Length: 367
Image (cartoon, rainbow, N blue to C red; front, side, top):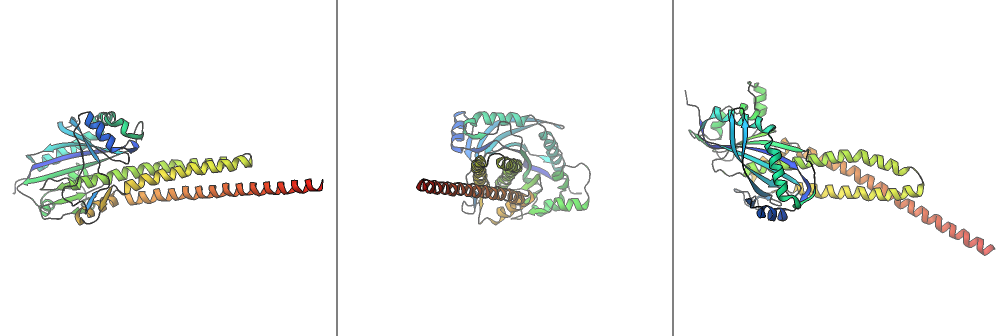
């Protein structure tokens, strides 16, 4: 029998993303973090030419120092850092290096780390530390972020004996790693789990699922991980604005109904005020969603573009974007109707005033 492959160099990175503000001034955040003596830099993709694929506005990376996670297999020492996006999202990354371990042990530690990270108090502490460092750079901050996304990235740089992408699929069982399940999965579940598989060279491999990705990358660059993080950040922001508009639509209907009640002249004024409020909502949401859509610009790098597109589809980002656009269209139509109704009412009042003046002039002439 062939000996079990060993992971010569690898790491597990746990991501937790939060919406913390309407927008973030990255230049101000960079100055504030630098003043706090944190390691600060802008994220750049390593393998791709800037003209092929690049960040619209590169996120800011801030080092948060070491952290320890208690797992069922024992404590895991990790390094933590944050990525700060201009559209109001932050991503906390906790990276645990694993080297010189058998594949089965690698899988067990990976899954134990995933389970431990779900309810770890370290996230709240790291988020509090980050917000304390860059607080003044947050525009309209969210006091207590309740919306979050999480994702797990399992990366391997080298195996012993060396394995390419096809070798990994043939010799290693990725299902327990990607699913986190202790029981054996059915054949149909295994096929579905491995449906999104990508390779560019014979030596690399990427397998995507809804909440986990396995990445074999001998060069050690993190471009695939960075692209998947951006897709998760876009998902988070679109979820936030989808829920915001879900709450806004019933309030809009209630305000329109309330504007119709009472004295007609006041109702017309309320229509105009409500139309301005709705226009403000549409303008703000449209501005941020455009920033989200342009977070990553993909043109020529076919491999990263395929992975990025598959991640967006897998995370249902296009469906969420379409839902946000539909709700914005409803608010725009309501704004237009209210504006037209207010304008018509003003025209009617003006015509009535002119008629009254004509009548007065006739009466005065007769007298």
